[in-house]
Every structure is written in structure tokens, then in C-alpha cells.
Image (tube, rainbow, N blue to C red):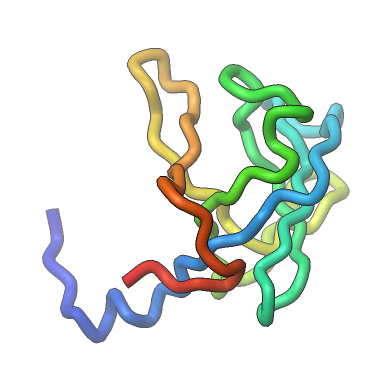
Length: 111
């Protein structure tokens, strides 16, 4: 594992946002949803998330998640993903979202 400096870590914009909408993404290679997230002062952004094993679309709406909002946009099929959804792989390799224990303001930075 490579060590990074605190200054390097501070460059990563890990921000909290609330999921406003989740839709199917049939053009993705692996099962995924398109999610629309409100990052408060950083705006509303879309991403693709391979989280269909543990979450239904209905369970996602209103949930707060952590995303990296300062990566470049990434094209996934015909869709432009504007941020990276964070999570951890379970024992089967399926993604479990990084969770927020208590509600915090959208746009809050992980510190």
C-alpha cells in the first residue's frame, strides 16, 4: 500500500448527497442504476451505480450517500457519470454503499 500525504487526501472531494431519483440502466454492461443526487451547494449530479444486488430503486430515494465529486466525468455506455459512488464489496463482490449514520447537510465534506 502506498502512503499519501494529508495534503493529497484533502484534494479528494468526498461529499454527502441525497438520492433524488433512481432508474434502471439497461445499457450498462453489469446491472446498474442511474442515480440523481443532490449535493447541496455543489448541485445535482448523476452517476451510474452497480448496487442492484442490495438495493431497490425505491429503497435508494431519500438515502444519503458519499460520492467523490471532483473526478472527471466518465462515459458509461451512452451516459455521462458525474461523480463516483462510494461503497465496499461484500463477500460476493457486490457493492454495499458507504452509509451515513445520521442525516447531515447535503454537500458536507468527509473530514
